[in-house]
Image 1 (tube, rainbow, N blue to C red):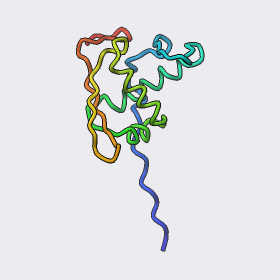
Image 2: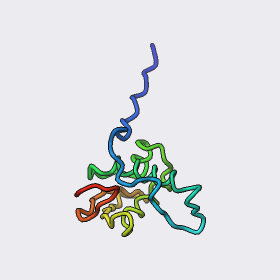
Image 3: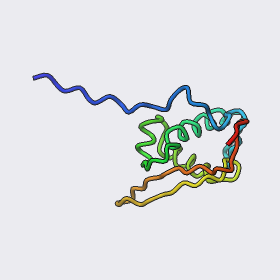
Length: 119
């Protein structure tokens, strides 16, 4: 009897989808943040998380991580960033599922514009 193949991984973010945040123009903060070292990496990361979450579906950090390849702790930080003024003051709902597990849903701020786009 042959072993069953595992199911294919879920599809990742659409590589042709336009980024909302231009990685070279995004500034993060924190005691250890150095823009020249971290700006591009974190800018690309916030876009990957956004591409997964922008459909408004509820997802756990693990589900987002499986789609983006980013660590859950980093995704949690990007979710907090979405709520900040400079990242659009978006709404991110959170819901406790149980046993310390939470899920999140991204709701864009309709007033926010970035990267030269129109609403």
